[in-house]
Length: 343
Ligand SMILES: [Zn+2]
Image 1 (cartoon, protein in one colour):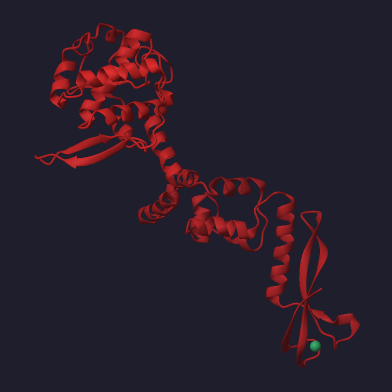
Image 2 (cartoon, helix red, strand yellow):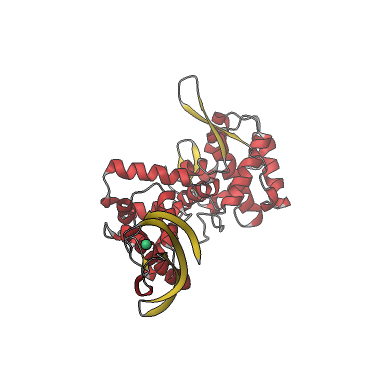
């Protein structure tokens, strides 16, 4: 089948004339299998029938590539163009991409131009395709393959690829990892396992009713939500674990808690240049994860502490048995929440 006509010097008849570029489907054997693929060639009508076809070097390479890609498609493997796309999406060189995956430096270059990848290599390439989080995992794993500067540069490129879903996932993972040692429902978490959806809903619920909600006060209000829920229903609301700290109860992982994508925090500077974390409601928050009983508990806490300054609620909490009976730095057991002051 005719592809196009080109006016060029013909190596078969040594004349410069119009030559046809043609294509046809041929078969070849790759990895012991017959594979059909599209082959391109030039046709000289002046030459004798025995030898009237020729290929340029570039054409031969392209034909071999077609054959390999036909094999790849049949076996559900990434084509060389798809491999190039994955690499370019991250802005990586062939060598850096190979290092990232822990492979020999020439591996990616070979897969893009002349060799068919094994199944295991294909699986790894698919893992990082459209998944910067997985790519970041590989970067962590093979960190020693890069200089510090290079690693930072690549890391930044990957983080930029994260969409909001990816960032949300990453911040949740970080927060969750702080609870990796607390996977059993017991007295430390009020027999409730960490529930991030609920924590985000509780925080936003408080923030929409309390205009000047800052981190210190929020932490106390969270503890009261869990303590009252535990006392009245037999289990805490959020699954947070609290420690006895100078400023009262403070949840494990409170810094990464404030970094969650769906916790809206604005950092402000106080008069003495200390960072203050102002908590705001999140637009479009799903409050259906809270049942009516829980919302009533939150409403009671809001009406009690709405106008308290941070110092007032800290002082108030300092007088709770749960605080006086625990040591500095210790986890506050929910069994002590039973003795919470009435309000
Ligand atoms: Zn010719």
